[in-house]
Image (cartoon, rainbow over all chains, first blue to last red; front, side):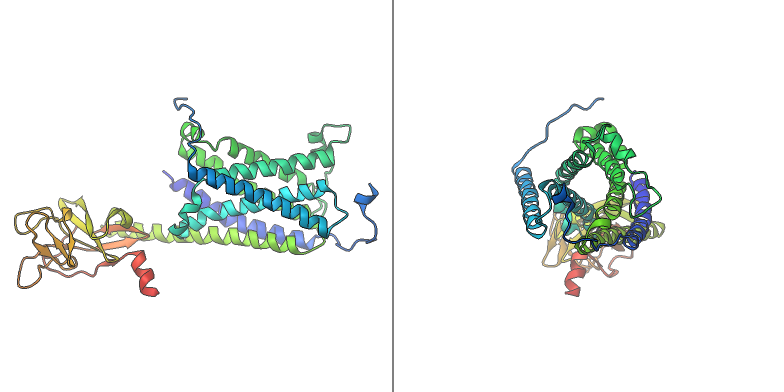
Length: 47
Length: 352
């Protein structure tokens, strides 16, 4: 009864690690510059 | 709908579990907001709470997703499965607070509905750094809601176990959406590496555990299929046979007594040579199977009586695969010694 579920579970976890690792790497590469243009300026204080 | 609703069966353990869970949630939030206020004095309370609830939801979901594969890799982790559904509902509630705070903070002050604003305020689908990540979190929250709403046994019984499990396997896609939500959202604007390290370790840990558990199950399935092809029949789990006792199984016209003793499993004919007494209803005394009728004794591995007696019973080949005892119904000549199968506990002991 649970064999199809186990099979789909296995397939999901063959795909997800690759997908998440690729997204993680792409996300890090696409990261915006973390250097603030003006470190003394705070948007929250400004608001 | 033939199943009636029954309230949660509260007991002392569940109350303690939930008390610890709520205490842990409050402690985490207090620490997050407190430390966050010290490190980032310009951050507002709303920002710290949004980040605190969001990171807690991801942490709880990561823990939940580790429990399943850990239990499949080692039964010692099975107690962690207890009340896992309460952990899941808590995750949804924490994620809901994060979502509501975020929508109110970033979308409630315009002249369109906050939910509409969530989907139309940013349409830069072509940019990773500026992707509309909030929509991903919203869809994950919908999945968590469906799971939390159907987590009660009432739904499990009404929907049937396979359908219920299919719905709850959506948690993997909710996890993927949440990870994408964090990668394309907080990770893009966060100025330190702590978030990236925690997220990377979490994703790698969850993925590795699931892959290891899946590989172990496939190996076990293959061994079982191979054993079945060789003619072995399944008896029961090793843990279901009390120490120095037997489980009687009937296969191909043979009644076989499968004994569990000293981390080993052996099988002999269930019929005593003396007066056909049921050996499987006896137990192992002084290392010998002892017939419950008149005390005739046989060595469990060879089926031979200890000297000077000469009585012998047939023996059967056994196997233990992933804690399950298998026996081959083809009898070996009476007195044939067969190497007993080792249980997992015995193998661990031997390695130590």
